[in-house]
Image 1: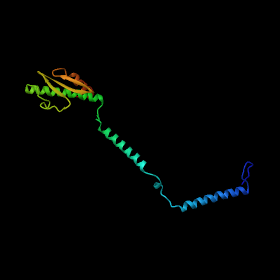
Image 2 (image 1 turned 90 degrees about the vertical axis):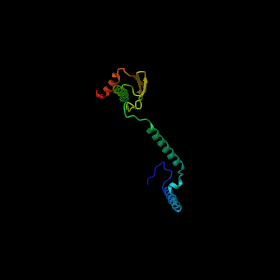
Image 3 (image 1 turned 45 degrees about the vertical axis):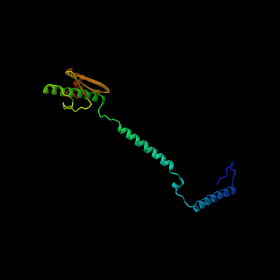
Image 4 (image 1 turned 120 degrees about the horizontal axis):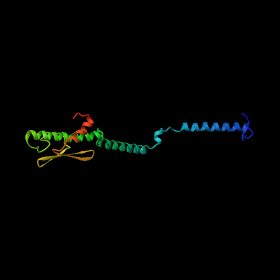
Amino acid sequence: MTNHPDSTIAGEDARKAARGFVDAIVEKDREDQARPAQPYHAKRKRIPELVFLMTVLAITTGFNIWRWSADRSVFTPGEEEALGMFDIAATADAIETFRRARGHLPASLAEAAVPFNHVTYRIEGESYVLQTVVAGSPVTYRGGSDLSPFTSRFDELTGGSS
C-alpha cells in the first residue's frame, strides 16, 4: 500500500478501517441469512398491473371491433365508379330486353331478373328512371337516353370487354 501525501488514513489506521469495513459486510450478510426469504413477487402489489393490462385489453379489443366492422371495399374509387356505371348499363339493357320480349316495362327489377339491389327503378309514363350512387354521388339514367357514357367508363377500366 502506498502512502499519498493527501491521504488522511495511513498505515495502521488504514488497516483498521479496512478491517472494520469487511466486518460490517460480513455482519450484514449474517443478518440477511437469518431473515426468512420473501419471494420478490410477494413484496409487490399486482392490482395496478392488472388494471393496466385489462385497460389495454379493452382498448385493443374495442379498436379491432371498430376496425373490422367498418365497411371495407376491395375496389379502388375508380373501379367502384366503373362498376356503378356498369350496373346502370346492365340494368338498362335488362329492362330493354324485357320490354322487347313482353311489350311493356317490368313492374320491378325483380320481374326483369336484375340482381343489383342498389339500383333504384321507377316507371315514368312510357319510360323509366334508374338511379344508383357512384363515388358518393347519385347517378341517374333515363330510359331511351344514350348509354355510352355508362358503358365507356366500364370499358376504360376493363379494356373494352363489355
